[in-house]
Length: 96
Image 1 (spheres, helix red, strand yellow):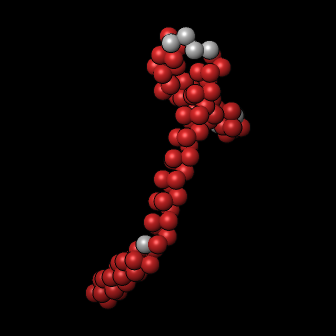
Image 2 (cartoon, helix red, strand yellow; image 1 turned 45 degrees about the horizontal axis):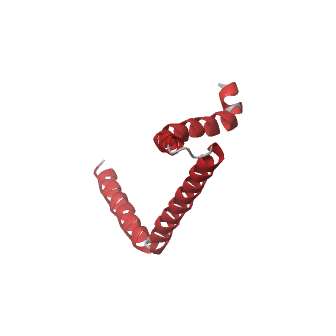
Image 3 (cartoon, helix red, strand yellow; image 1 turned 180 degrees about the horizontal axis):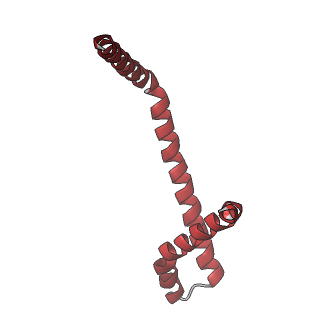
């Protein structure tokens, strides 16, 4: 198991690269059939990947901001539930 933890830094990018190659294979084949040069095809793939990463970072940032702005409401709800649990626990422990 120690070897897997050690090689984690190699396997994760490798698996991600294999996944991306399967995802973009149809587009790559289509662009190659259009007689585009390999460097141009790879440039298009790189631009698409970068745009997808930027888009996903915007989505994650929006989700994090939504969580931060809604935190007081969640905190109040959690506090109320904890209070309910403790009072029910105290009532149950008083019976015993």
